[in-house]
Image (cartoon, rainbow, N blue to C red; front, top):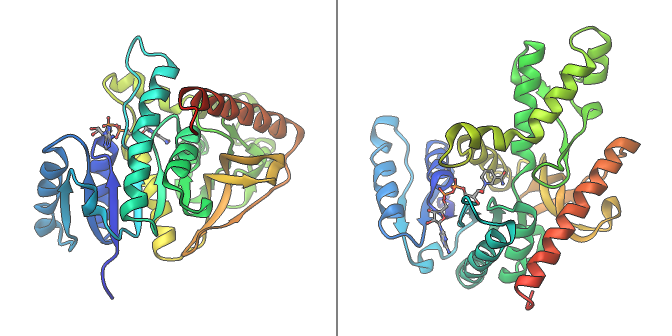
Length: 319
Ligand code: TXD
């Protein structure tokens, strides 16, 4: 069986970590693309030289030419510019929208059959824009945020309950950012819902509320510590889980920014919901019943995503 091909568009902090993880897991041959000259080539060479001691077999190539992503099975997009002091959200939107245009066109021309995972922020708007510019089917493009947000929630819950992260499942819905909705009722330890664990005296409502709030601002907490950039290990690991589910047809049920066509009362928008990812891309959008509080939180989150799209359309009327 020929090796799969994984194209990483953006060879920054997350792009480099994605390449490392994909190589260690031998998911396929890897192409690192970036507009910065030397960075993708240097990282690819460095990573290739990690192969002998670790014992992985994966081709690694760095490039500034979209032609090199030809025929990729998976493209993971991290290209873009982070927000710098003095920049408004619209400034960032405008710049990254242009980046999504060039990336979308590159994918359309060279890897139109790929499964595409967008990571670039502001996530819910950028995945939508990338879909518009690439013209790929909606079920072949998703945004990564929910797996990361729920991992953060799982980590904090595991710490609070003093149990293995393996046994903690967590549920997060909605857009990426302050409006995300961690759903406590659907979060469990080995099947026991968190509200039951509170009743069992494992924690208190106050502590769980604080964990929910910490999860919501989980990205900001890391930016505050790193100062020069944002999280990259957990974001990369989360996207690799999604890529693996597609490449191996695992049909995992993962929270992703997916295109909705009426589910949850939302039409033609990318928002974080549980989906099944298999060899056909997004094979199912899973619609769960939400209690009044979660529904209100979800609607607020959807409104925030809509605002972002209005801003995008204002910047590029062509969209
Ligand atoms: O949950 C999530 N979705 C996220 C999103 C979690 C963490 C970080 N998230 C966002 O991912 C973050 O706000 C950024 O928008 C992306 C990528 O984060 P990373 O930390 O990898 O950023 P870097 O290190 O700045 O890398 C971005 C690279 C850099 O090498 C640029 O030269 C390149 O993108 N870049 C481009 N590549 C290709 N094409 C174009 N046009 C381009 N412009 C910049």
